[in-house]
Length: 168
Image (cartoon, rainbow, N blue to C red; front, side):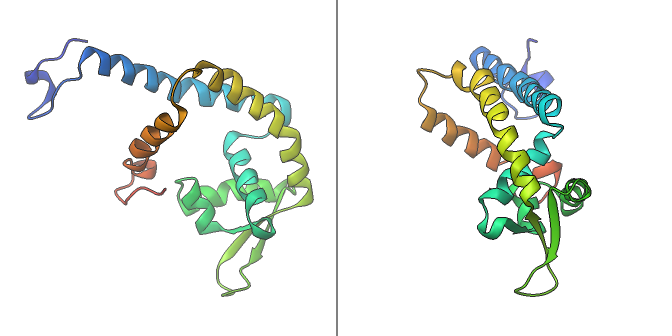
């Protein structure tokens, strides 16, 4: 779509054609790739990408446990949103809730043996999907530069449209 200064609002510079092409490609990838990865995990293992994210983060944490607030922060999610995800995982026996031993008020999400087993089954599926749908298309690119650029713009976007600063 051709844009002029009159159609972009006061002081906003229109995108150059190369910027527009890059943005539209990124925007499509942001929509399509997560849907494909989600479908692969759901069909093969009955787990969503958000649930997979929780399982991975818990598996990497000391004692396979994280405070709910830390888990929410890592996923740029609200505490209520991560609580809903964890509730579903608790019902399935994949995660347990426990009181935080250091203060007694905070809640921990703890990965169960069943949750770890599911993660170990789902990991090859997710890895294959990431490789096929993303990494195999990036050969020849400077992946460190790409990762740095994505981290910069992702860090500048508040999670969930909230006005608070972004979570890293």
